[in-house]
Image (cartoon, rainbow, N blue to C red; front, side):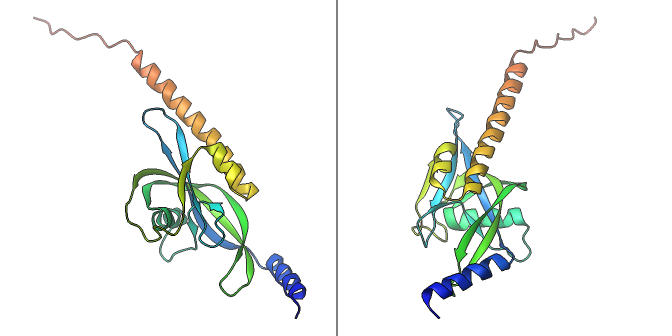
Length: 182
């Protein structure tokens, strides 16, 4: 079989197979002083492209728990993961046996509270904290780019609402003190 024939066969099979399921974490942190939100990007081990932590389903773990576990193993981050998905994106992946498949990644938001010094894949990837816009520029997958920009809007709205609530609370007139009757 020629290389071209093999490639054509792989492409046909890729589109006939259902996508392989993976779970990923969109890791973010809010800077205390500025209130600025940054997201974590890392390089893939095989191609060096910019990606988010993601991986295959795990026995006895919910999808959002898998996303949290992958974030720890691949990027050394711990935090609070939201159980509802932000959305999904697809990408082509070449498996160890050379077969190309389409993977569908369900993405979960993970607010990073701690970065570990030691973790499973330390030194195997480049890890960077960047703005939403920079993350959207760096990733290749259009659907992942859209997820970054949609999450930026969600976080902007959430932080604005929190700030408005805080201002409202700060400006409340304190309740009058009750003076006991003599």
